[in-house]
Image (cartoon, rainbow, N blue to C red; front, side):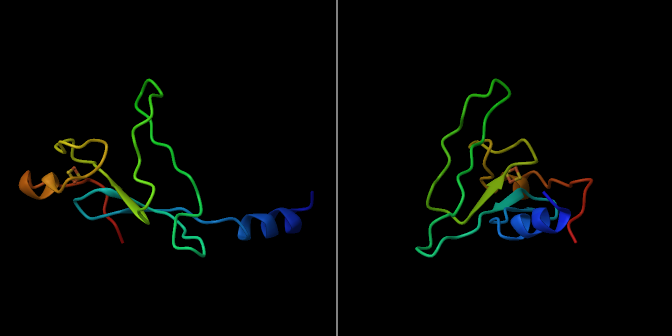
Amino acid sequence: MTIEKSEKLVKNLPVVKLRCRKDGPLVVELPQGIDGTPAVAIQITDHHHEPFTVPTHKSALALCRCGESSNRPFCDGSHKLCAFQANETAH
Ligand code: FES
């Protein structure tokens, strides 16, 4: 396969965006299909590869980075209460 052909294939793939919110969660933005549902499937597992239940109707998922969420691995807003400060910044 040529590089041009390979790049064309990549351009046609749905794009999943990962966005670090400043002092907050890692947001996974899922591409939407024509019917408004996510165009890709996503699986999130723990360190034993056990899957978490992932909401299938959302266009974005927020993953906790502060470690204080009571709904891990998902953010529940607790980062605001613990004044979480991430080393990484979002631009
Ligand atoms: S980043 Fe939001 S609860 Fe941890």
